[in-house]
Image 1 (tube, rainbow, N blue to C red):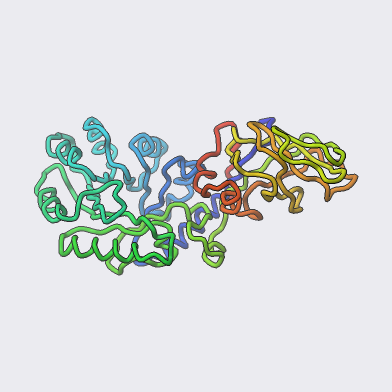
Image 2 (image 1 turned 30 degrees about the horizontal axis):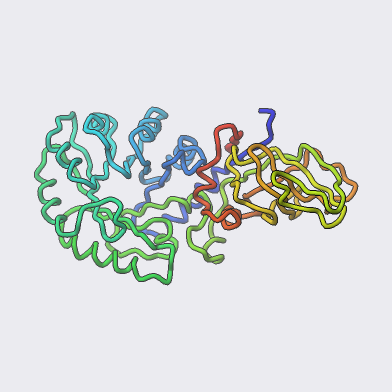
Length: 360
């Protein structure tokens, strides 16, 4: 691939982060969340890397699950949004998938369905996120009714935290208490704790399953440097300088002339832009690493190119210099803050024209 925009994905880092999540959650088991193409890192490659250590995987939809099964992944796979139409139940049974059930229409479809083998249901409770899940008053009845259905095998009880990344919030504690009180003595495992709750150990002793996501890829959802440094960045997003020039004081660069040189300046053009997944809202001053030296973005991010400061290189020829946009030296969350977004969107937003290299 001639164009230099590249995402280098270190699979051993993802493995390290998964094992770290398991150690924090022990003795609970850990579901490796690899939805959205493993947050942009490559679901099949990540699943293969974790195949000998992962207790299970989680995806958003059946298409993502079938892709993994067809690639030879044998571990249990959880559908986090369950199914959307009743005809998916045949595939869920055939491919032996675990299925979140969060709405009455799903219960009705299961009860009316006929398929080869019973399915494992993850019954979701709404404890305050108000996105998916049954109301608290229904859980005891629903659990009992599901247990009687011949179409259902095991039942796991699940909920999702809304504010676990905010260590000052009491909502996680409140949601946990509601969940455990409502479940009571119902039989079946429970699953509670996303990356934030795993990292902060905000999970009850009763938990059998945790669901780490973003932390597997080396980004912390909690704004705490001590927590973040325990994770190994998995993706390095980089490209090369393709042009350089000297501009005089008072001259501007890029669309809308947003940056003006206060003195004669050496600037470079790098072959990466928002069509590759670099955030358009990142502005002047956003850090980059050029040939091992800290520098900054200048002006507006374009579709295919970015302007950077090369003044620290004096008379050197900078064509071909490598520029890191995030990775081992620049945390993806730092770039996200500069663009008024979160690291999740940047990792998931890497476009298909970016060359992906999976390494150990």
